[in-house]
Length: 609
Ligand code: AGP
View (tube, protein in one colour):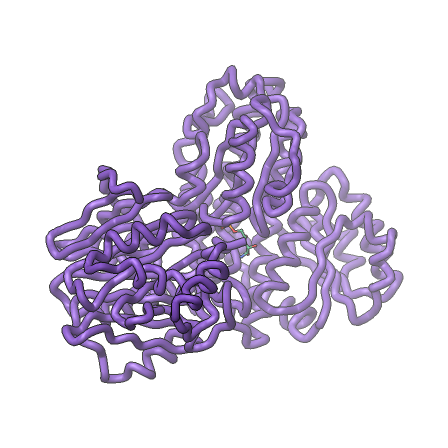
């Protein structure tokens, strides 16, 4: 997944592009570059490594020109080297491209072009596309791009400029996000809103198969068959401050600490206290349709898949609907049994994860109703599902997902409540559930007031370890998976999440005095069982850190350390138990000097397979 940004207008483009790339760097950061039409031709500057490497290379030699494109890369084809960095140019060197996505038939196109004398400087599929456009180019960039795109398979969010057309920027999307920023007599294209916010809040979301031509007089949208398309101009309600760190050392800590507010935002307008139910009109499913749902499939990736597992416990326990949770990357290639009676819920913070998008498309092809639980407004998944609930958690910039996770669980609770109250949940039970939901933000704040205790646990037990185990039962088993993923992805410690009872079937062989074991052990229906599991680990010398409810002297006596969390309904405990685990992984990563917001090898949204 990469970040792209383009500009055409009266101002100098280069600095605007670099500023835009700074805001996009979280999308991919292994190389970057800009290209500017400077009156004599194209000035292309690019560098491997972080954006700062490009800025060093440019120094005070900022290229002049008022039309340009910029790119920050997360490698898919070709190593993260300077030759592979975008922008790429065609054979003539007068047409430049930036691209987010994968051209799946680039190998065959490259061979054909090489047979016609083309020579390539990189290993990338993107350079092949540049050469293809160059071959079609007869003085009309828009036409050449449209012709080339009709020949390519794959996913793209891209932009082209030409030294011979200093008043035109051509961009197109298919499978990767792209939007147009409509400024005051200036226009932008970008992968998302973050580079635009300081210039404009007016944006146009492009859909797959659409191409936009920006000129110095405006923009127009069309499809590849030249049919003009009118698009609404949307207003973005995220201000720049929300994107900036607001004084926190890392986006991840900012976003962890935003969870009282983000949870409120997710729940806002959805809770009907008197009726003991929720309002989820966005699902575009009537009560009768919800009642007739025979089965639910939840599909997602990574942390979003973990929230889906919690949704399974909620929906089966309260709404008595059979639920399966599927890795999207597996679901899309299986031959799943899905039909019109199946409700498929896609969960995605970014709304752009390729596997999740493909799984949803597969489900639609098979006749299922699809709904999305998505954070990014206007994202592809949000626009392709039949209905959905926006998380309204605000921009999540840290690669490790935190506030989106708890908002996803809250959104699943809203869906569960609606369906359960249509079936067998009483109004009093519904009101009790709502009351517990409403208390969560304040309870999260109580946890956030004690971060120093968690930092001390990180320092004492996990900072120097090479391995760790996270164990939970019932609805907190997915929390064990999530806690382990958080530690893995930002501190690079090997951690595994497991159902606590499963330890005796093998993994307990791993236990010794060097193995820290984090237990998620609230006073719930399986509390006595997890006490036994703690005893099993202690008997073998393991170090035990336990998340407990206050006053749990039984576990306090057994564990090497405990952290007390507020009490809530069993099914809602994951929203509270996940917070200390987010903080634990954060403090370990900081202590280990890791790049918390941009961990190695990862990107915020995986828009390629
Ligand atoms: C979460 O911390 C990870 N960064 C990753 O697993 C993420 O949850 C996954 O890639 C799914 O992303 P999405 O929610 O945007 O679809």
